[in-house]
Image (cartoon, rainbow, N blue to C red; front, side):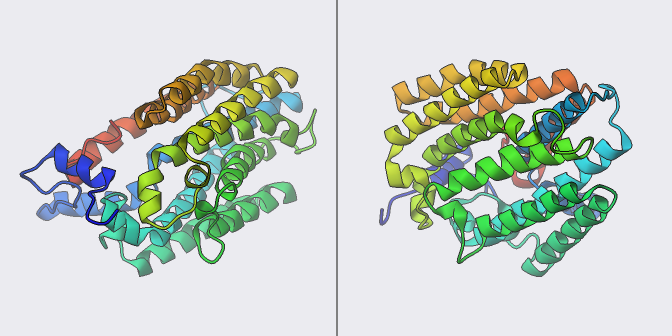
Length: 340
């Protein structure tokens, strides 16, 4: 690997060979102060919050249905709105912690610039994390003990996932398991607990299983796409341990299992979304190209987001607004075309 340009470095070089790309651009006066304030919003990484949001909402839907309750698709209830905002902050805090842990490799690979480039100092980043966690814990005080335990579990898992010596994100199979639990079960269960006991109906954890499997499949393919950067960073992810094709097989098996379990528990939303996503994982495996591995997990996230949008209409403008604002901000602040 010595002397070889990484895929990330090649990408940024190809975007613009004359101007400095992927570094914060300074603006005078109010514009500069406004963009600096927005740094604290986008360091939460709204684009990868989308899966967190949609599984939280699907958990709320199935919790309401299991308890025989109804909700409005047009406006969130006070409890759902508070949960949505608080859990956004909590998971955003976990993403900041991830950037703290990866700041050296992020600086080398020219991504996640906020902490890596010192746009937000380490001291301020840790303070921000603490404030976000305290806000989530404060909101949890208005809910039952099940909800509070799930919030604490999310905070703990976020630490174990990112920070050494645990560092689950860099350990084969633990990376998949922690993502499946964190993004497929805990957020689903928190959405459920915001409106009903976890034991209502068939129980939150039974209904969470197909979503955990879908997240496991999606995350496995992300480890394939990130193999080069993870190798340089000294990680030992599932894809680096198993190899690209074996990981693609594993991802396809996870998504197939998601379809099967969704059918067993009569979750037609997951069945439809996972079923539509399944061919993407097959194409990625057959082609064995990084491009198609990336397409598989990006389009799957979009398909599941559509499922949440069918149930919660107010989520659609949030989704669209997040994408458009992110695109505008990254172009203006870093001269990058992101997320597409």
